[in-house]
Figure 1 (cartoon, rainbow, N blue to C red):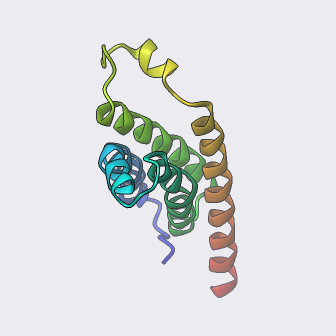
Figure 2 (tube, rainbow, N blue to C red; figure 1 turned 135 degrees about the vertical axis):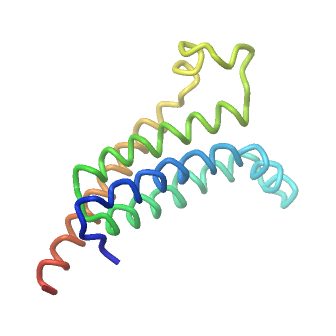
Figure 3 (tube, helix red, strand yellow; figure 1 turned 30 degrees about the vertical axis):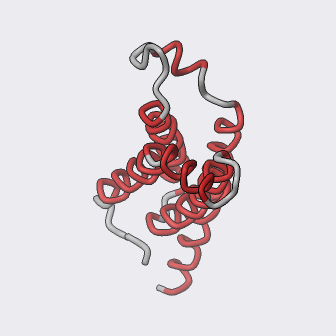
Length: 134
């Protein structure tokens, strides 16, 4: 479903926020669940970063069909994922911004770029499909 109204950004933005924050918060629990199944706890994080979040970036990009918003959404989704991770795995001083920034793995920056590309391509494809269907 492509959302065509110019006023639908407020519907998609909370989805980007939640799609990053909720898996970030659940990371510790998902790690324990993976450990109980015999996997390393990092497998759960890898599944979220490499499968779940890219699928959401594609879906939300296609639903909104705005390439620029898909790029912004990827930044919001990754940022809230990092924030959720900070709450799930607290540091010694959780409110220190410098500590939080130092704790960001470089792979998440690269993943954010990937989410932006995937979401933008999905938005462009949805826009093109919507234009040909009209």
